[in-house]
Length: 206
Image (cartoon, rainbow, N blue to C red; front, side, top):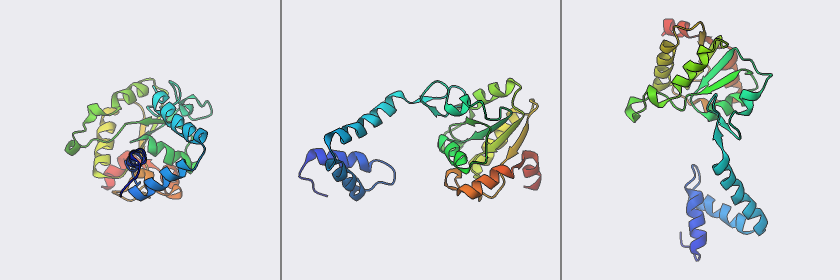
């Protein structure tokens, strides 16, 4: 793809570095912005810069937040006794879209994967244990993608929580094994949360 402007070329390269954006799509986006007023384009750029500079990680659940504590953790109408453990912030968004869950969250920040060099110490497991020590949480829903790495993570975390008086459940297998949670349709994911099963039962049936 030949460009008559190095500035356009650099902008296309920046857009095409985003996931799912090819060179042609990037060029269309750049040309679209070129057709807008300078104020709109500058506002677009400033929004991205402001987001990157000011976005924070919630000190309680590790979700993304504008403040030290995210809106979900600050919501007094949510259930304090139920904690949904997820792999990433994208999973929180997927579950929230179902409208079927009203408890709290905890983001692990990934799953245990020896092949990729990710161990338990690389995840937010210690902070999860500290939250459980408070004694307010009575049920933990392990909403982890049903993959080998996900099941390994669920097994490890459940072992770390054995000494606490909490019940551990997993989402029902409406989400197919090997699938990513964030790509499940809202109806299937919502039903999987509602019809969750005790973790011990899933081990007995495996």
